[in-house]
Image (cartoon, rainbow, N blue to C red; front, side, top):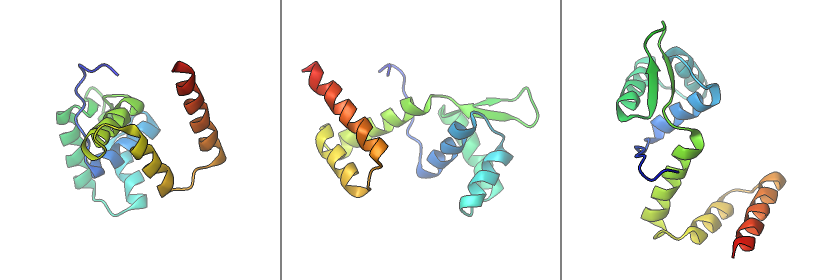
Length: 129
């Protein structure tokens, strides 16, 4: 990730909206609202206002040339998630990834596929030493 790119941290509600946008590629406010409302009670005007704020924060891009307006993520999912993990790592784990990884793995059971990918990554990291 380019360290010169400043990505604002999304709030919990903004992260949910980004999740829908990343899944769809692009979406209208109505489409985001319908997906979120199927999972939890969130009003249309709340989603609209949050998406307007997110556009101002540089989290979303808006295409006003079409009606209804379309929104897409301003940054790729992996880039935003990396920024969020870096922030968490710095704030809660003194910049040390080991305790963060151990805590994350202890919280939820990983699938065999996830464990395979973790092992591959560890092998790659070991080879670089």
